Image (cartoon, rainbow, N blue to C red):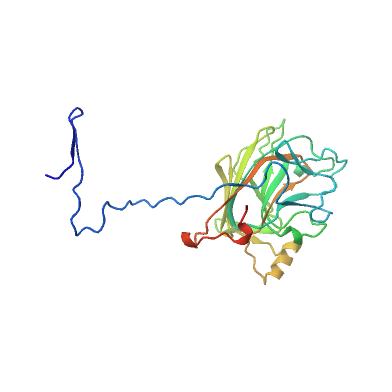
Amino acid sequence: MPIALLCCHALGVVLALAEPPNAADVSWPPASPIAPTPVEAPWIPLFNGADLEGWTYKETGSALGKDPSGVVSVRDGRLVFDYADWTRFGGRFGHLCREIPHERYRIRAVYRFFGEQARGGPGWAYRNSGIMIHAQDPATMRTDQEFPVSIEVQLLGGFDNRRTYRPTANLCTPGTNVEIDGELRSQHCINSESGTYRPPAWVTVEVEVHGDEEIVHRVDGKEVMRYQRPQLDPRDPDAKAIIDGRDGELALRRGWIALQGESHPVEFKSVELQILPDPKVPAGDQKAPAGDQED
């Protein structure tokens, strides 16, 4: 009788271990049918809680790197856009841009709105901010350009005393288009399926970016929007200039990340990035492009 009969008389159960294989067997023990789960890359903080290292500010009407009114600052470990000292907004939209581009990644930000909108800010910009992805190089933006050509993950806050539905993590498309279920969508903004979030609640938004293939929005861990094939819009003059410099190519495979200020104070508790693998490249050959190598 083969060795290894384990008898548990108290339980009345007999467990028989399998006999070892003979020489004709090709493997022992049998291979698991479940492939090992690849180890995910770590989340990298893009904001260090102390200063704006790794970021560059671009405001409408000013040169890249200039923040004439001190809109962006670090306060109590948070990244803050504040307009408290402004007498009038004057169309000075601002974007705090990462200094390198990315292609395949997740970005996760925890944000909330606070305070009062700057005087003269557009009505639609009340409790309105955004995470810009696949954005044009900020160094190529015109001095008077309001928004970078990009895909915008629009961040909205609900009204205090109105029950108006106002979702967040919506899609807006300055100079771009996307496809949803194979249909080209050219309207400027499309609502997500999120709920309405009012200050002072913190909201966690995560965006999963797969190059020019697919982009997914999540709010507090729940998927609220999915779309495909981000691309430049030839109807937009700034996008057309980029298209002409790319021999007519429309696809948006990679680009810069930016946080947006549109006249309402907003603060970010954290901003993190996770680099994703390219499914077309064997695991052993994966190497992040130079622009994707965050410290």
